[in-house]
Image (cartoon, rainbow, N blue to C red; front, side, top):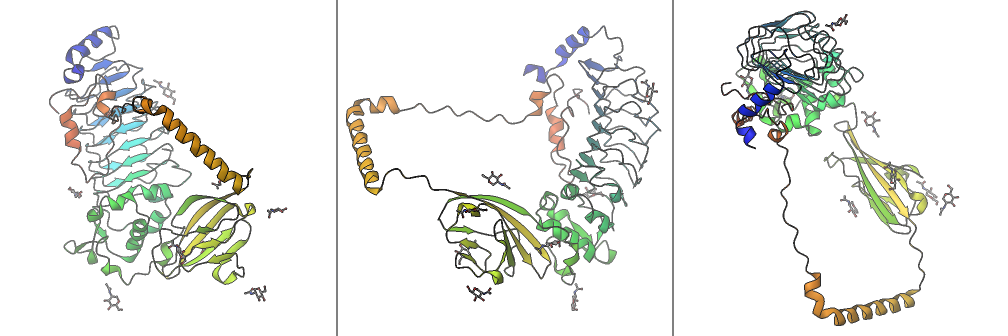
Length: 460
Ligand SMILES: *[C@@H]1O[C@H](CO)[C@@H](O)[C@H](O)[C@H]1NC(C)=O
Ligand SMILES: *[C@@H]1O[C@H](CO)[C@@H](O)[C@H](O)[C@H]1NC(C)=O
Ligand SMILES: *[C@@H]1O[C@H](CO)[C@@H](O)[C@H](O)[C@H]1NC(C)=O
Ligand SMILES: *[C@@H]1O[C@H](CO)[C@@H](O)[C@H](O)[C@H]1NC(C)=O
Ligand SMILES: *[C@@H]1O[C@H](CO)[C@@H](O)[C@H](O)[C@H]1NC(C)=O
Ligand SMILES: *[C@@H]1O[C@H](CO)[C@@H](O)[C@H](O)[C@H]1NC(C)=O
Ligand SMILES: *[C@@H]1O[C@H](CO)[C@@H](O)[C@H](O)[C@H]1NC(C)=O
Ligand SMILES: *[C@@H]1O[C@H](CO)[C@@H](O)[C@H](O)[C@H]1NC(C)=O
C-alpha cells in the first residue's frame, strides 16, 4: 500500500487525467466523484464545483456561513463534510436541491441555534453530526422531515432543552442513535422521553449533563439499566446528577442509588422487559421441562404460562397429573404429545416493582422414528456393524496413518475491517485516527466511510 503512504504522485496523475473537467477548482482535488477542498484556507465556497460529485469535503477551512442554494448544482451529493470551520449559522435554503444528502458533518463549528429551516428537504439524510458546536437551542421542528435519519450527534454543546416530542415512531422509524451527552440539560420532559420509540430510547445518550436528581429522572434510568442499554453500561460513571441542584453535590446515580430509596418506580413500566425466544425439540412421550428464566431476578415472582392447547396455566389452575408448575416457574409436562407442539409463553411478574417479563419457548414434538427391527434385531445389527468395523480396521491398518492424516488447514487471519483499505487514494492519516479514539465522552464512535478519507494534508 505505498499509495497510502504517499498518495501524492498518484493523485497528481489522477488529477491530470481529470484535467478536462474544468470545474474542479484549483485549490481542490477531484478524483472520480469525490472532491476535496479540505484545509485550503477557504473563506467562502468555491465558485463552481463539479456538478456530479457524490462526496464533497470542505473541512478545516474558514467558512462562516452558507447561503441559499449553496449546493443546488450538485444533485448527486451524498456526503458533505464541513467539520472544523467557523460556521455560525445557515441561511434559508442552504441545502436546496441537495436532497440526495445522506451524511452531513457540521461538527466542530460555531452554530448557536439549530433553526427549523436548516435541514428542510433532506429526507434522505441518515447521519447528522453536530457535536462540538455552541448550540444552546434546537428548534422544535428541526428534525421533522428527516424521515430517514438513523444517527444524530449533538454531544458537546450547551443544549438545555431538546424537542423530544417531535420524535415519534412514524416520523423517525430508523432513528437508533441520539447523542445528547455532555450538554447542559438539568430537567428533561421525562414523559416525552418515556414516550420515545423503543429504538430511540435504546440509543439515547444523556450522560455528562447537569441533571437534577429526582425520582422521575431516576425511574427512567432505572428501567434503562434494567434493560442493560449500552448507553448506561458504557458510561456508568459519567451518569451524574446533582442533589437539590447544588453542582457541588453530585452523585453517580447508577452506582449510588440510596438517595432514591424512597422513590416509587411502579408507574414507569409501560412494556414487558424482554421476550426471550428459545426452541425445544422433543420426541413424543418424553418429559419436558420448560423454564421461565427472564431478565427479572427477584426471588418473589409469580409465573403464568400460556400453552397452545391448554390456555393459561397458573399454579392454582392445575389439576392434572401430567402437568406441573414449579415455584421457580419451570413447567413440566410428563409425556408430551405431538399435539402439544407450539408456542408456550411464560410471563414472570414482580408484583412489588410492577414489572413483568415474558419468555417464549417454541416446542416441537416429533413422532419417534418408526422402528423397523425389534430389540433383538437391533442388537444383531449392532454386532454385524462392529464385526465389519473390526475387519476394516484389520485390513486397512498399513494404510491407516498415511491416508487419514489430513494436513492442518493453515491459520487464516480473519480480515478485520479497516477503513484505510477501503478508501483507496483518500486514505486516512493514521495520526488522525488516533486522535479520534480517546474521545470516549462523545458517544460518536463510527466515522462515516468517507470520513477522514479526504485528508492528506500534513497539517490539520
Ligand atoms: C432547485 O429546485 C427548484 C425546485 O425545488 C427548481 O425550481 C430549481 O430549478 C432547482 N435549481 C437547480 C439549479 O437545479
Ligand atoms: C426516605 O424515607 C425515610 C423515612 O420516611 C427518611 O428517613 C429518609 O430520610 C428518606 N430518604 C431520602 C433519601 O429522602
Ligand atoms: C405486563 O405489564 C403490562 C404493562 O404494565 C401489562 O399491560 C400486562 O397486562 C402485564 N402482563 C401480565 C401478564 O401481568
Ligand atoms: C380436580 O379434579 C378432581 C376430579 O378429577 C375434582 O374433584 C377437583 O375438584 C378438581 N380440583 C380443582 C381445583 O379443579
Ligand atoms: C425449577 O425447579 C425444578 C424442580 O425443583 C427443577 O427440576 C428445575 O431444574 C428448576 N429450574 C430452574 C431453572 O432452576
Ligand atoms: C390432535 O388433535 C386433533 C384435533 O385437534 C385430534 O383429532 C387428534 O386426535 C389429536 N391427536 C392426538 C395424538 O392427540
Ligand atoms: C416453531 O418451530 C417450528 C419448527 O421448528 C417452526 O416451523 C415455527 O415457525 C416456529 N414458531 C415460531 C413462533 O418461531
Ligand atoms: C463533560 O462535558 C463538558 C462540557 O459540558 C466537557 O468539557 C467534558 O469534557 C465532558 N466530560 C466527559 C467526561 O465527557
